[in-house]
Image 1: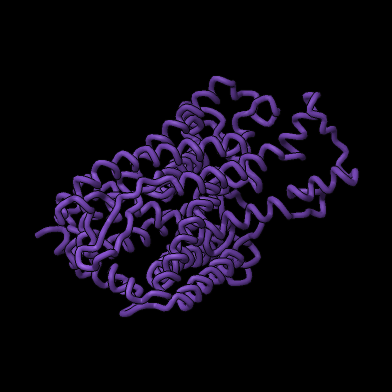
Image 2: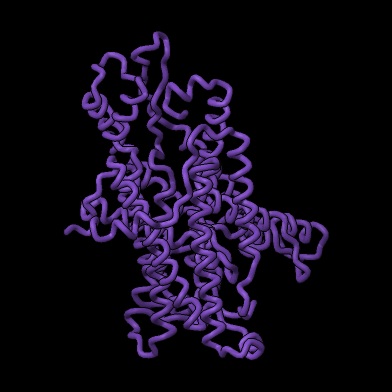
Length: 492
């Protein structure tokens, strides 16, 4: 008896959001998308009952723009469990260990059920140590005393709320994917990054200027008396870093520009309709063919590694130094976990700014940077390949889609194998190059810093996802204006 026969009763009974039976009007899709976005913002501003607000540490803080969660809220775990489950399934599927045929409707149901089950399990495994170790989400003693259930009872209550929030995020993502525009994961990342960028530009603090415009306002009116002369070391540092932040502004604008440009670079394969004379089109193979979503998988893997290190440090008093030594702020300063910790800001490597512990030497920073760069470039290329193969974007799947739509490549026989060979000239190579390029850009953005202290990966994701969302909206509007195109391309 195979594992599919054993697990089928459970996997086929996993709750699922039903797909629309017919065409969903564009306005209704926008309403579903906007509604889920409102619910997302609502949940990120609700603290679990029983939580000691403002206490504890947020180790995932440096990954927040990628994991799209909010510290101390119902969405504490963010999209981390969804991404982790995708990593596991992609690795198992890539090694052909699942034995599932994604073209078989029965296996498709099993795959989706298995993914949901993994997300539920990973959500519980992620939330449990955050709550029950007392390191990240400490309970409020006053609540424990008022309810008379003790500290463990309050921790269990917090765990249930965090767990429900993670499961809700899973179904919110499914609603957007089936009834809205784009994907829920992408929408949540855009929302999280946008909050940070807007705050980085416009936030004001009662304790002093904090946002970009607020800082320059304080400099102009004299509330922040600093030298901005580029001819002195102090003035140049003030101009490029705090409080001027010119380098962060340049990096933010550069990433916006380079991602939009990279999204527009493509190889266009001409197509013509086999039955409709004069109907022509083009299949674009973009430079960033696999999109930047595989970067979520890479960063989530790094986040999980660091999370394990943080747990070991807090729970294992005799952890050897070669494995990791942590500062009072909970960050590794030496050992294996230090070298595996990705560089998230310029203060992680610019030792001359005086914000790096004295025990961290320049050669240690160089090794850490080299490992991070290798991890992102190689990991980006590998996960891009997995992403293309498991999401139906590979040469074989693309050839079948073109064949089913009634299109063909002019000058070639109308045969899926012939089209597949043409696609193999472009898709694999572009996938690897695009994945490596995105990894390189993400590391560069992290090195120089961005407005709002958004991670380079988060900014890349937000810009690219927004660009693709714009393209999807334009396509939806085109289909809405010309219903015959929906029938021609099988979107009815």
